[in-house]
Picture 1: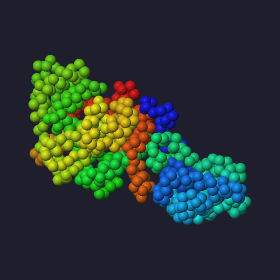
Picture 2: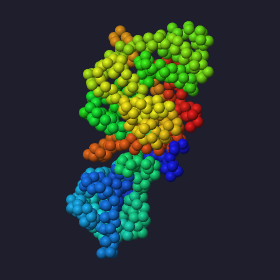
Picture 3: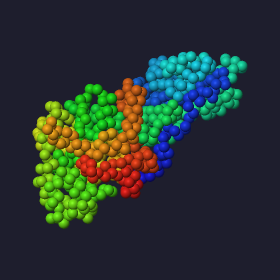
Picture 4: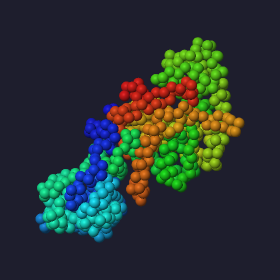
Length: 632
């Protein structure tokens, strides 16, 4: 653990022992149903058993109701009204059972909200959000096919009619009866509701009750002589692994999606899928909404998603939005270095020499020159007391940099040979746009800055370029500060000036960039540049890291499933897609509290550490190797 969180937060950790969906290892729906075939009647609890809600806690739905009612602090008002109504009921009739109308009668007195309108609005919201537990739906249908008598018993303030509507809408048809505490002046907790059900069913029928509350569904039923089957609450399982520091409503919708999907028992998933689903889905969803809003508000004509990180961004973006012109653009740090070399000597010397010296795996000077197609310079090495087979290492970095500086004109001319091709490529992409936004994961914003230089200054294409990044972090902190202050680079999650605590957390190690970019890898090689051909040009790529592709596909599958489920649940509530950069980062912040999960399930991922598609001399590092070197 190395995240700079307080001691209370550090006590809560993500699930580290594999797939979170396997933590409970429920029996299959068939086995669960088969285990109850000896009984005549199967009784089901309703909420969190037959029906699920996409919220971490049931009362969080009241935040949605409050927004519809335009009532500030409604969740607190609603919860206090229910408590007061139950206390009044206990005085008047000796039990605490109430209906939704009793509750809203008090709300009307306190707020002026019409009790009938408020109660109906809350019910309609429940009707909108409650959905069938897929696991229990299978159990229900299996037992129904065996002609079992099926009933539902619920400790709830909604009326019997309302609960029947909820169940019917979710597909639970054919119930013999439904028993609800609010209309029967008795609950499962005090066993009265079970007694009422037994009396109606008759003493000759054997009953088994299925529920998620151990006290009221299991203990009370058993005390009444009813057999039981415990179904562990999906939120009780999942909430212990969710990040606490997400804002309340987004935190609840996020946790609700995760918990109901992973822990219902219908299906189990791989750790790689879950890395995308749990820790990347909220971030990708939020970033895409932020990009869309930025583009709309700033009159962006076209959004350009840079390879490779832009692959998953664009797929999710186009799934969510159909009215924003966008394109996938082949670009990379290497391409940016090559095609802006006339103004970025420092970047070239850092990336092509100094960074190579710090690589775990060695690269020879000859290998570097050949990769850059600067073979003509090899014969000049001996003038600098350099040998072509020498590895680039800390001891000769300055000498190699001097060698490049002395031969700079040759370097620039060679790496600039495709400049006209690059220009034609971007002219075709922007297609007369007056304002474009370049999207990348981060971190320095060099991709967007390089394209901005080419389009605005070098080529004078009469198009303004804006750089949008997920996170902005420069190795020396001040490297791109002026660009951030001038809003030439706009960060979604953090920068030196924005969400500074997240910036500091992420900067604990530069390797957080690597872990974060696991969400946005792609199943094809990194782009290296353009090559002129008789037909025009072709794209040149680095060596493919094919060993990683199956894992990347699973990560993206998890991300996409999260986005699909979130859209399905909340598509009528646009404001629930306004996910702050701070909130979007919290799931990732959770997983990097302890790196054992990343090391165990992603440690064998291989990353190319050569330069510019040097297929013969290419070398690879594993993520575990990188972490070992960093002492993580």
